[in-house]
Image (tube, rainbow, N blue to C red):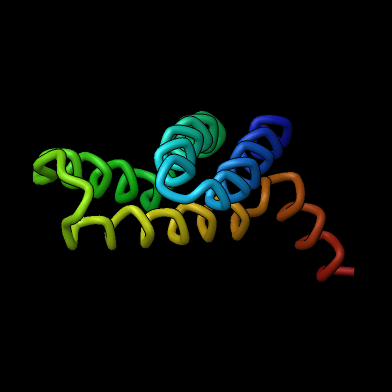
Length: 105
């Protein structure tokens, strides 16, 4: 699980680097972040926040009309930060177990 979480984090960082590519970078960032979210989902299948992410992604593609000049592109930008917060803010179970053991000592 820790390896999957770390893989998800690396993919997310690569996705954030793609933002430097301008409009094409946002598209690649979206692809990589969905890929990172799938890895995260494998590591934490009971995490509610990741299901909310996939729901908002689905809603975005349902209401998007295919044009690049709409206000809807606020949603993907928010999703970039939201997924980054979820992935990098989550600790693996092993880390949480070690922290709780250290607090009990």
